[in-house]
Image 1 (cartoon, rainbow, N blue to C red):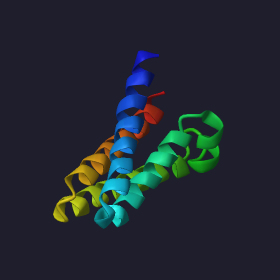
Image 2: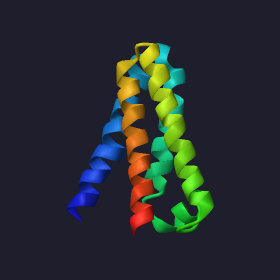
Image 3: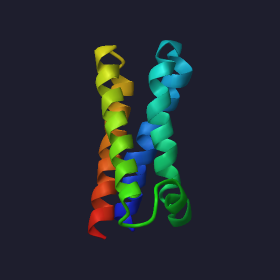
Length: 111
């Protein structure tokens, strides 16, 4: 249970708060915030079993792992692009989202 609380704090709350801060305080980086924000919402919805099954796919399916890889890859690309644009907080949030999605893939592979 403690692992789940730490996961939610690091993988959901921290990137979401960084992205919300950037959305309201820095209008120049709003375009960079959209992709990690969508990844954050998808990750928050995938914590529950039924929305995860609908959005990502059933356990051990190709669709589940393909979705995880695509979202993690897009978050990583967004982190690199935000770093090039020198939006460091958005880059950090996108990198955290990419790591969180990769962790979700690892957990789904093991369990």
